[in-house]
Length: 551
Image (cartoon, rainbow, N blue to C red; front, side):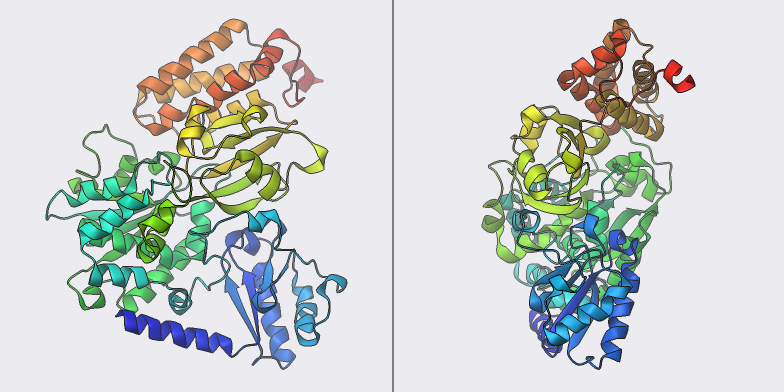
C-alpha cells in the first residue's frame, strides 16, 4: 500500500459519501449501546428506506461522541445538529425534519446544542475521529488520513527520525507515570538487532474510567497505526494488545480492524512493499487491576500468574520472554500518527512547558455533563468541572475531585484553579493517572471515599509483597472503625504511619500509590476524620454507627 493508493481509497470513500445530501451518525459505543442505540440506528435505516430517501440520507454507526449522560446521541453532520436521548420512536421525526427542513426544536425531539463549553472547550487529537467514522470500516479511517503517517514513516523516514519526532514532541506516557515516550522508545531501539516486542496496555481497571475502552471502540485503527509506527522505530516485528475481557465491543472492533489492515497490507509481512513486517495479536486479561502494571502484564501474556517483579531490569531491556519490550497505553499510541503527520512542533505547541499535548478524561460522578472529554494540558480543574462539566447538579456544592483512580488523590475546592498537568497534580498530592476523574459533592463523606478506594486496592492486591498485602488490609480495617464511630485518635495516628510504610516499601505502583486517597483526605479533610473519632458523627450523614444501623 503506497501513499498514492491510500489517497485513492480516501477519495473514493469521500466521493461515495458526497452522493448523500444528509449524513446521520448514531453513536454505537458501549455507553449509548446500553441505552438502545443499535435499535435507534436500525429504526433510522428502516425509516430512510420506507420514506424513499435511500439515495439522499446516509445512516451509519460511529464511535463515542463524548456526552455519555445524554445518550443515545445522533448527529446530522450536514446540518450541524445533535439530538440527545433518542429512541427508535424518534426516527420518523428525525428523517421528516431532514425531508421538510422543519424546526427540530418544536418536533418533540431533544436537540443538543454543540456551541456550548462541553464541546467548544475541548481540543481533540486522540478523539478527532470519534463520533465521525465507522470503527468497523477501514476505508472510513483512511478517508480521515488514516495510515498516512505509517506509510510515510516506513517509506520516507528512518527509525531514528521517527524517534526524534516523538522525542521533540514532548509526548509523555498517558498511562499514569508520564515517562517521556521518545526516551522509552530510544532505550528499546538501542538494544541492538534482536527479537523485540511492542505491547499496548489496554488493561484499564480504574473505577469510573473508560477512556481506553472508548478509543478502542471508536477508532481502533488509530491505535494499530501507532503501534506499527512504534515497532518500525524500535525494530520490533511482533506486537500484543492486552485488553480486558470485560470490553467485548472493543475486542470485536480490534479483531475486525486487524483483519482489515492485514488484508490491505498495512499490517503483516512487507508493509508497503518494504522489508518492515509487523504482526499484532490480542491477549485478553481476566480483570486483575495489578495487570495494569507492566511487569505483571508481561507475566500474564507469558501465561503466568499476573504479578509484578522487581525492577531493574526494566522491560525496555528485558521484558516479554526476556526480550526488549516497548509498552505504552492506548492513549499514548493514539497520539503517534497525528505527531508524525503534523510534526513535533505542532504537538509541542499545545499544553504546558513540561506537559505537552492533550489529555483524555472520563468525567464522572456528581457533575452535570458526564462523559468522555479531551482537553489541552494546563487547563484548570475549575474549567473542566464547572464549564465543560456544567457544574454540580441539584444545587449542591463541590467538595472534591478524585483524579488518577485508586492511585490518585482527592482534590478540594481550594485547589480548583490548579492546572491539570503532571507536575501540578503531583504538588497537591494527586496524579494524572490514566484519566479517571470522579467529582464529589457535599453529600460525599471523604472518609468513606478513602475506605472505598482502600477496599478496592486491598481486594486487587496480588499478595506478592507483605506491605501491600497486609498493609492495605490493616488500613481498610482502621477506616472501617473510623466510619463506624469506633476509632480513637491513636487509630488515626496508626493509619498515617501505615500510609508511609505501604507507600515506601511496596513492590509495585499499586501498593506504592494505594495510600494516596487516604493521605489526601487526611490532609484536606482532617475535620471529617476528627468528627468521626470524637463522636460528632459523619458530617455528610453517609456513615452509620452500629447503633444507628441496629435502630
